[in-house]
Structures are given as structure tokens and as C-alpha cells.
Image (tube, rainbow, N blue to C red; front, side):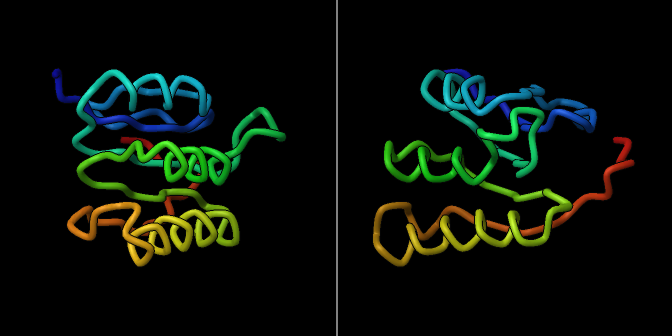
Length: 112
């Protein structure tokens, strides 16, 4: 299976070497198809009814994880909710404990 790194964001550009996705559906498709080395997630997306927290819930439900996950959202409340959901999945033995999960907000004007 091919290994890739994925950057979910509808506003910022992806860092070099990352596949940029702008919707949770695109992200889920890649999680189902590829071995994801690093998954970097935003909370607020253009589609206001489908956000990064909904993606994390779906990831936990379907047990779709990357080798490493970063929440880069500048939305402190949304980002913390995503982080806490993933950490709870680890405590509940749904997500492996060896997957590092970090909360590292990026400014909206982030430029890789």
C-alpha cells in the first residue's frame, strides 16, 4: 500500500510532500485507500455542516487512523474537541496507543 501524508484544510496551502484535501469525504477516501504516515487536520471547513470534528468521529467509528495525527486548527474549541475525541479513542482501546496525537494550531496566514 502506498504511503502518503495528508493535510486537510480549505484555506491554507499544504506543506511540501503532503496531499491537500479540502473535504472530510476526500480525507476518508484517502484513509481507506492509502497508508497515511501523517494526517494534519483543520476543524473549520467551507462546508459549515461538515467539519473536522465530524471527520474524527467517523475515523473512530470506522477505525481509520494514520501513523501520526496532528490537529492544526486555529479554532481552539474545535481543535481541542478533535484532540480529546482521539485521545478518548485511545483510552477506550479503539485507537492504538502508539499513534502520536498532537494539538498544534497554525495561524490562518500559515505559508509552508
